[in-house]
Image (tube, rainbow, N blue to C red; front, top):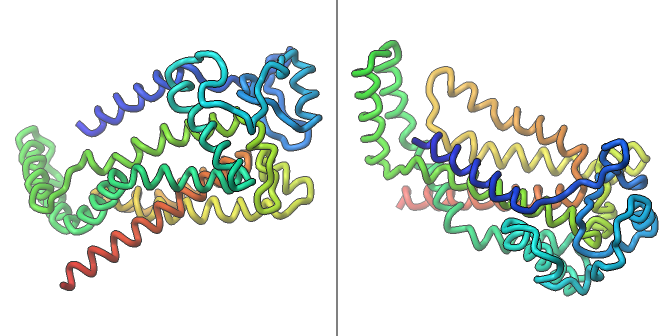
Length: 313
């Protein structure tokens, strides 16, 4: 049942996001055009004017009319033409909000952090509920393991049905709603896509700097160019990713037998994947990723401590 719900949700998000999305700038050989300085893959349908002269030259060389675009600091929530539900309801308003916060705090990296935290606080009731399910599943793990051992070699239909019924009773006993445990994944994916597109379509964001890092530059380009400050990003991204998965993804599923070993390895596996991806993600995306990971880690630690305190009482 959960797998079916997840599948339907993911298909819905993909279809919805295709109603207007980021278009990569390509050259006459149908290859993605990259900023020669930062290594960033440039977006064709940016929503406001770049200020960097080299970036402007690249766009003009590829016949992109940027003169008709508004200045980024003057971006309106309804700037531009209709591009689809996804862009007009999520991406452009999010980009506009980041710009407004950036105009106030005078730094778009800081604006990304503030916006990320505000959105996480807005969806906190849902993510908190999901995190609570992780703690409840830990409490139920002993009972679930007993059921797994009881039916370990039984594959007939009747045994599988009884196993499912007994597991359902354990869920009810501990107040577990398996679907609620998927809420974080349901929320994270569209948020990441929206932030990714908003960042890539606003030159003011990827032209700005934060902690001595140019936000449109990828760690790979930064480090290979001799600027080792980008190692900060490559340290922060895997570290926060590991603990985020360790506290949530790996603990949020009831696993037994051989599954337990696999689930214990998930934080490490996902961290390795993210490290590889992080080498080629812009620093702006890295800032969003680290911020949300830290929020998740702190949230789960506080929930765990709260439950331990209540149990002692």
